Length: 78
Image (cartoon, rainbow, N blue to C red; front, side):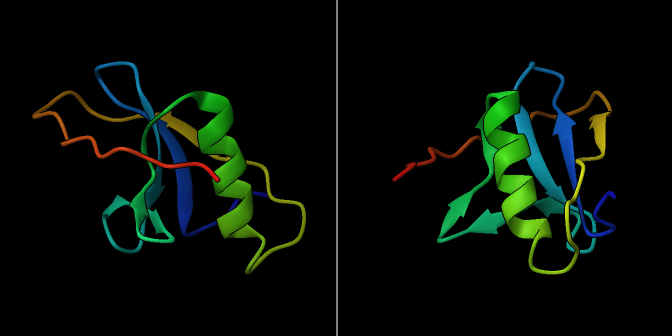
C-alpha cells in the first residue's frame, strides 16, 4: 500500500528524495531534508514516515520533472 502523503522521487541529477506531496517539497525528519539520497535510503525513510499512518507501505516511485535543481542538504544518518 502506498502512502498518499509521501513519494520516493528521482531528481533530474539522479539523486533520490522523499517527496511530501501535501507540502509540495522534500520531506523532513529530525531536522534533516530527505534529499540527495540513494534509492535504498529514500525507500527506508519513506517507510518510516508512512508507518505513522499506514501499515506495510510500498513506496510510490516517480521521476521529478526537469527544471531548476533543488538545493541538496546533507543528511546525517545515526
